Length: 175
Image (cartoon, rainbow, N blue to C red; front, side, top):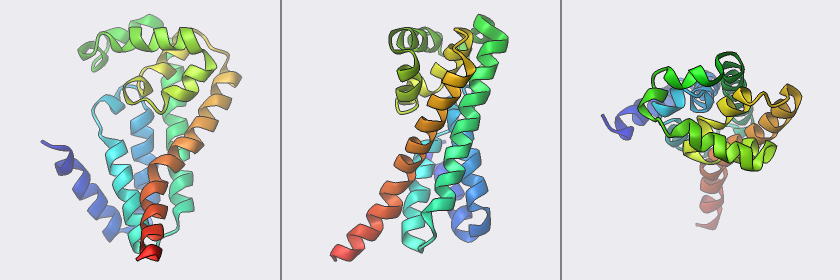
């Protein structure tokens, strides 16, 4: 199964059922940010495609942006909470058992950068799945985590949808 086999039907669904689009985006962003699901779901590629669909169809970017930001925020929050509750035992659960160096890499990144690591980890694909877990395992203060989580979710959501949504419109004005 290829990324296209997964992404094309989802994008086609959003095209055909515009009213469900924001819920689909929220779920994709949630899955992309949730530690276990993000290892299996190519959500960033799908969200980029939905961004182009937004630009092509003239739909408003803002509800999709809000949905993506909320989904990303909730996914990282749940990953953080799982890290708090399961601590280092989380490494023994599938699919993390298939990626044994993911948590140690996330831990090194978090130890080096702290809250900035949580912020920038959202933008680094492989670390996106592990840094919130590690922040929970390391018992990062919840308020600090949530502030950084919210800021990075809003910026990430815009960054993943806007290139297609706004870039396509910009290109159309040029030609």
